[in-house]
Image (cartoon, rainbow, N blue to C red; front, side, top):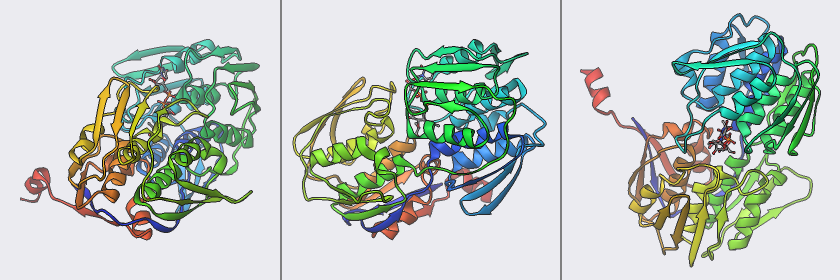
Length: 430
Ligand code: EPZ
């Protein structure tokens, strides 16, 4: 088993380049099915969720070439199957996007129910409501979603709650439907806009992405395109918080400051300096010795992102005063708090609210990552803590952060990834 070993207390200093956005890439890769030709996609992060999406595509007959480390060519003209392998699909949430893409191109799809971070029930009822509104028949049995339609007909879709995945699947399914589709109460995250831009570059006709009303005029065919994925605002936010927490001074490169506004506002409020030069794609974060706490409530974009909640709570655990953190998106996204308490954090959780009492310092300890952003939070805690922190189950972290420990070492952090043979490995070796 691999672990991160961190010796804390060193401020992050230097420059770091932010990778392409995980939640855009895991939507854009299945979307390439709609091209029925060759797409070249750049700035694709090398993370395990992306590798799974590419593996699913290739098992279905797509031809994939890695042109450069973060640049891939995908030819989906030869896709001959609309079934997604079970084990691959259940390892990520993004596998659900193959439903919309396969239905959109072939009018049929057979995709296992998705997996992903264990942060709540995460149903896909809104995705299914959308497919049925377009005229598809959807059945779920033995963990597999089967959808099919003679025709997909443009219609009015109103999401009962804002859903990123539901909005993505709606865009994928209705690009080539007959007529106009209007999606209301749509998600507005940057990766929704990025997907819409990619689909339009393949010949789709989408207007309004980034607002809560998106209009899609169905087109008869789409084609290959070249595209570059936006920078990852959650990776950028994670490095902003890590820099603030360690009292460092870091220039983040390849960012879109506009996407980071909800995070920047909160960091400035507690006393962090964030410098943004006009119309360039970087920003400087300068930490301070102490901060005063503040309250956070996660909301759909442009509110404070739920994917930054664990990282921000970790920073708040070392701020003066008491902070309240309310998680309004997912039911159980505070599991990591138990691990932070092992490190001397003083946090109590009641359902969706965490009361965070600032402590002078965290203490290193052996801890476990329970999901992707929880793992990022524990890394931040380890970077600040006195002593050594060992983080287990780092595969969660590597689903969504490209070379995290390499980037952190480049900023002066004392972090290594080490392999520890566990009982299973020992038995295998004997
Ligand atoms: C996406 O998950 C992201 N994952 C999540 O990022 C992110 O936290 C989330 O959007 C919110 O921004 C990917 O993009 C792969 P939702 P998704 O549908 O699509 C409920 C990370 O750390 N809901 O917007 O699953 C749902 O239970 C991951 O990168 C329904 O009730 O999120 C949740 O309470 C974690 N029915 C709320 O809506 C549905 O049909 C928002 O979920 C769909 C969702």
